[in-house]
Amino acid sequence: MLKKLWPYARPYRGWIALGVACSAAEAIFELLIPLVMSDIVDIGIATGDQDYILRKGVLMAVMAAVSLCFGLGAAACSATAGMGFGANLRTAEYDHIQEYAFSNIERFSTASLVTRLTNDVNNLQMTLMFSMRLLVRAPVMLVAALFLSIRISRQLSNVFLVALPLLVVAVALILTKASPRFRAMQEKTDALNLVVQEDLTGIRVVKSFVQEDHEREKFAKRNEDLKSNAERAFGMVVINMPIMMLIIYGTIIAVMWFGGQMVFAGTLEAGKLITFFTYITQIMMSLMMVSMIFMMLTRSVACANRIAEVLEETPAIGDGAAVPGSAVESGSIDFDHVWFKYDADSPEWILQDVDLHIRAGQTVGILGGTGSGKTTLVSLIPRLYEATEGTVRVGGRPVAAYTMEHLRDACSVVLQKNTLFSGTIRENLLWGDPNATEEQLWAACRAACADEFLERMPDGLDTDLGEGGVNVSGGQKQRLCIARAFLKQPKVLILDDSTSAVDTATDAKIRAAFANELKDTTKIIIAQRVTSICDADTILVMDGGRVVAQGTHDELMDQCEIYREVYRSQQEGASIGG
Image 1 (cartoon, rainbow, N blue to C red):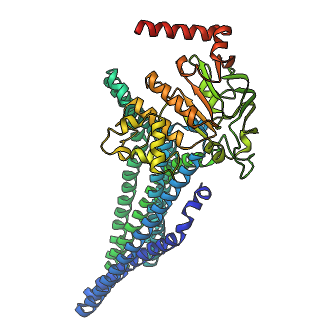
Image 2 (cartoon, rainbow, N blue to C red):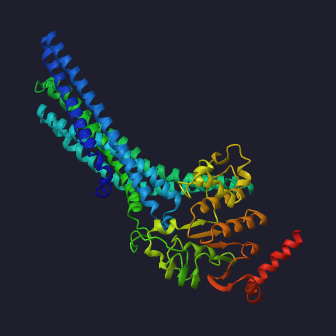
Image 3 (tube, rainbow, N blue to C red):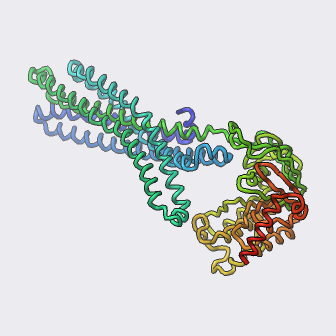
C-alpha cells in the first residue's frame, strides 16, 4: 500500500525528511534534560552549591527552548507534507474519476466516491502528519530512554522484561480486532452519505410527497448503523488506553518498590532514581503513542485500500484504439448490427441487432415506450457506453477510432436530466464554446427560445443560477441546455426528450431554428410527442430494444400500428384537452 501511495507524497519528501530530523532532535533534547536534573539533585543539592544549580538550571532552560524550536519545526513540516499529500491524492482520484465511464461510476456509487475523495483522504493525510512526529519521536525516545535507563541501573531495568512483552501482546490483540471494524465503519459512512445526497438532491420530491418522516427514519437507521460500527471500532481504541495505563502504573509501582529499596541500601542515588522515573514514564508513554499510531494506521489501511480501488479501477471506455489527431469529418451515423447490455452477465439485451444508417445533416426522430432503448441507443454515439457487439460509426469511422475528446467535441448531447452548474447563465453557456462572443451567446439563446425570459431578467446572461439551476423553471433550464449545445455547432446534435417541459409552439420554434441554422448537423430527437418529430426526415419506432419500424410520418401512419396508436391517442387527448 505504501508503494502505491508514495508517488503522491514524493514531491514533499524533503519536508518529510526535515520533519523526521526535527522530531528526532526534539526527542533527544528532551531525553537529555533529566540527566541535567539528576546532576542538580545528586551534586548541586547534595553539596549546597547554588552556582552549580543555577548553571545547570540555565542549561535545562536552553535545552527545553531548543527542543521547543525543533518541535515547532517538526509540526510545520508535517503539516506541509500532510496537506500537500492529501491535495495530490484528491487530485489524482478526481482526475481518474473523470476518465470513468458511466459503468465505472455505477459500480462505486456517487456517494462512495465522495467519501473516498474527502473522508478517506483526510484520514490518510492526518495519519501522515502524526506519523511523521510520533512514529519518529516515540521510537527515538523509547530506544534512547531504555539505553539511558540501563546505564543508570541494569538491575532496575529488568522491570521492562515483564512490562514490554505485555504491552506488545495487548497492542497486537487490539489491532487484530480493530482492522475489520474500521473497514465496516467506512462502508457505513458511504451508506449514510448516499441517503444525505439523495435527500438533498430530491428535496422537492420529498416535500411534494410529504415523505419527510420516512426520510428521517431512513436517515436515522443509517446514522444508527454508522454509530454502532463506530462505537465498535473506536471501542478498541478506548480499551487500548486503560490497558496501557494499567501496565505503565504497574511498572512505576514496581520501580518505586525495588528502586526505593536500592536507595535505602545505598546502591542507587536518589537523583538517579528520579531520572529513572522520568525515563520509565517516557518509555511507557512512547509505547502508548506507538499503539495509538498503530490504531490510526489500522483505520488508514482501510481508507488506503478504498482509495487504491478508485485509482486502480480501469475505465471501461478508453482511447486505446484511437488514432491520435483524428477528427470527425461529418455527422453520418451507422449502427452495424449493434447489441448492447449494461451487465455482461445479464441474460437480457437492452438493444438487439440494431442496423441503422443515418446520412449527415438528416433529422431523425425516435419514438418508443419506456424501456424501449431510445436513450441507450443515442448514448452509444458519443461512447457514453460501449456497444457489446457490433460497431457504431460516426463520420464513416468506428467511434473507438476517435479519442474521446475529438468524438465528444463533435457531439452535443442534451440528456433527459438537464444539468446546470452553480454560477451565471453566461458561465454555463460558455461550456458549449469558451470563446463565444456576446452576439453568438444571444444567437444561441434565440435559437433555443431562451431569449424570451433572459431579456426579462435584470442581469440577463449574468444572472446567477444558484446550485443546479434552482433559480429557473424546468422549461427554462431545458432551453438553456439546448442553447449550450447549440453553441458547439456540432456534427451531431442529440436531444433526448429535451423539450418535454416547453409548450408545442416553443418546441416548433426550436426545431425550425435548428433546421435553418444547423443544416449540416445530424439532428437526433427523442420525443414522446409525435408533433415534435413528425417533420423529421426519418422516424424510428423502437420496442423491446429493436427498431421495429422506420420511415417518414406518412409512411409510418400507413405501415406501423404502434406509431398510429401513439399518434391517435395524442390527437384524441389534444382534442379532449381543447
